[in-house]
Image 1 (spheres, rainbow, N blue to C red):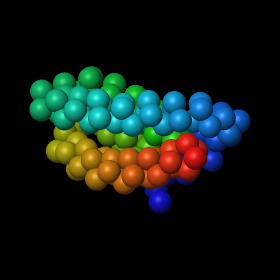
Image 2 (image 1 turned 90 degrees about the vertical axis):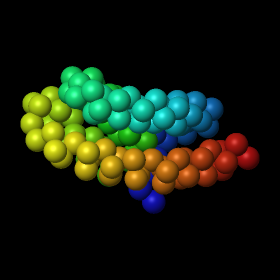
Image 3 (image 1 turned 180 degrees about the vertical axis):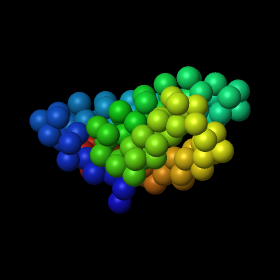
Length: 115
């Protein structure tokens, strides 16, 4: 598992309804951010890219997806400084490869709190 929900559980006081809302928001955010990151890369809009990456990095931190946080930290720093654009695609590819795993893990967790 790459998702560790201990922080979310602590932050919400194990409130199932609040955790559910936050997880669903994050899942929706993943799709939106994924699309905007690709668009920003294509347009070479490094400011927007760093903004989108920062947004998902913060949310991934709350969800305990540390591998995603690490990749987003790297990409955010590179994009802010407009350095090494040849590395952006690799970071984005790693981010995309984590999304499906995170979705499965979070949806599985949602099933446990809905029962």
